[in-house]
Amino acid sequence: MPGGRRRLRNQNSNSWKVPRSVVGNKMGSIDKILNVQVGSVYKRAYVILSLLGFLFSLAKPPDLILMVFSSAPSSAFVDNPHASNVQTIVTEWNLTDSRNWIPGFLQSMFYVGYMPGAIIMGQLSDLYGRKRVSWIVYALSLVFQIVTGFCQNWQQFAACRAISGFLIGGLGVVQTILTQESTGSKLWVVNGALAEIGYTANMLAFLWIAYLFPSWRQMYFITTIPGIFVFIYFYIVPESPRWLLSRGKIISAQEVVEKISKWNKSNEEDYDLLLDDDAGTISSDRQTGDTGQSNSREISTARLLTSEPEIKKTRSIIDLIKHPTLRYRSLILSLQWFTASFVFYGITLGSGSFSSNFYVAFIISGISQIPAVPLFIYLMERKWAGRRRTLIWFMALGAICMFVMYIVPFEEGEHSNYKLALLFFGKIGISGAFDLLYIYTAELFPTVVRNVGLGSMSFWARVGGVIAPFLANLAMFSGLNTPFLAFGVVSFASSVFAAFLPETRGKIIPNTIEEAEQQEDETDEDYNFSLCRNTNKHL
Image (cartoon, rainbow, N blue to C red):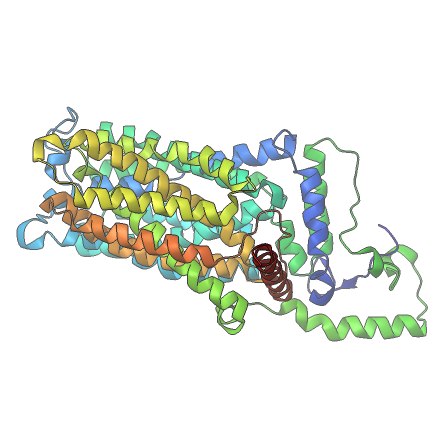
């Protein structure tokens, strides 16, 4: 180990720790190191991480498929030769006529649980680690999916779906953060794209299971089996080095980076995660073996000990409200996340209203998410587009398609072709916006509140998810166009308010709240300078 590292041994821990005040200045270093060690899609380490991430996305149980087909109307199975005498929760528990509100309610219960799960699990992962929380929550989610298949009435089903939503909501947030924090920031866009590809592949692959085994109990049991392979992911993937460093666990973070380095067959075995100007302040007893205490060392050690409580300090949702910069970003992002979820799940769960063939409509809905991936990747990295304008354009595309769905009249037997086209392009817009928000939000929130920030925004996404099933069922069962007007209005509003967010393309990812505020001031200065320069041209 280099002699220039300042360290403090915590007697109750196996990791060497330094104060958070020191760690806060080191996060840029870990990003630079990860950008070198996992900084290219051609590097062996990133190939391993991305393949494991794809395994996770592909094999985990498909919650959307289970929601759509377990509560689908009997007309959805007319074109399925495997669906003779098929049982859904609608037919088994007679959820029709005066009880036709119950299927939408059951779909919403999943997102009722999802909302607190996203926030609570985010906080737990800040305390106990991304990886540990992820695999425990995932194991519990598999257990409750199996339990759901044994439900004997819709009340039991609602309770199980709420618990599953709680677990999966937390898992989604923590898993996204673990993936992003295990790679350099310049690969975050690619990470988001691969996650979307995996999500789409998962939906299309399990659609065949829903086609071959349309009975809702069979679907819940069979789709659990591939999920077992996800534990391979948790066995191999290391803990987030950024989280370890933010908790002051320098040695553990270094070991993770060295592990990634070995995947690349690199000979580098030692990484200095601290700033150069911090070197030499304190020498490690472990390295020097010096038992003597100099006056300067006593003073420095005392300073480290008094800073120890800072290591335990954990940021919360209060910080998103207390600081003006984070507050206004949170307000605008809350609307964006609500809209993305509200429209995405609204048109996905209501796919049956776009075509008489339920399976064809769902396939089109899934396939439309694929072109959204290269499109948002290309636009996000263009100087003339960036994150902000790309979000505006995607939201606007979704709004236009939904408005057309509401305005243009159609006959019952003639709606399939152009409605499927509107479904395709509308889903491209809202899927691209949803994918972009994961990356954009992670870049807007500093490291110390990134997990709680993403969890809080995911909460508002689930508010949209709770409302969406009711409008989806209204469009699917009654044939009314009113839900599409609602989807169009919120998409348009989000497109307008997205213009007030700062651009993050090419900017350094903030690690502390102070850095985020400083970045905001620099953005304002750049904007004012540009405005004055453009004004002077016309004087």
